[in-house]
Image 1: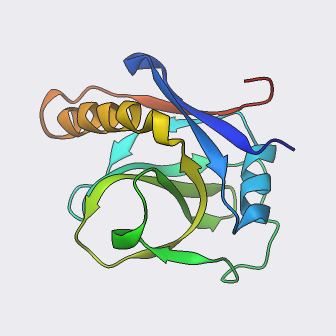
Image 2 (image 1 turned 90 degrees about the horizontal axis):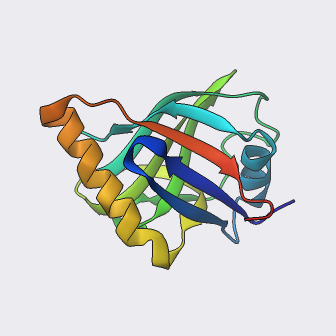
Image 3 (image 1 turned 135 degrees about the vertical axis):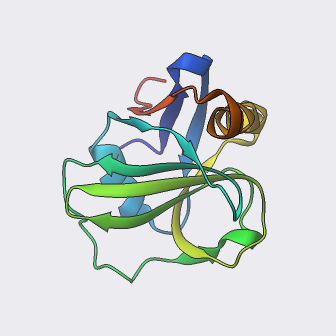
Length: 149
């Protein structure tokens, strides 16, 4: 199994590599086993600077015991942290922090965007924010296996 996966935004011609964390490794492996996946990319509207993909279609139900994951409070997470929450049945939501958060929220984290890719992540965040509040452009996010990448 690989220790990385790729998030790509084809319309923005941007991508980042996400690395496995030391905790929630079972979650990471489960996520990677389902790739490729695709969803509409959204943005958190009130709580802070985060990309949000709601209702990502899944191929498999969770393979771990729910509520046993390591969770991190989002205000204190590093930029680039990837959170998985609300995995229910055949859908889940993914949040990727790229800047400051003001609200107290804790989620299971399972991946980290590589430091070198944070500028690309922030550029995507700015573009998606503009689309949400002004242009109404629709962007997709692709979650891809990094095998061979």
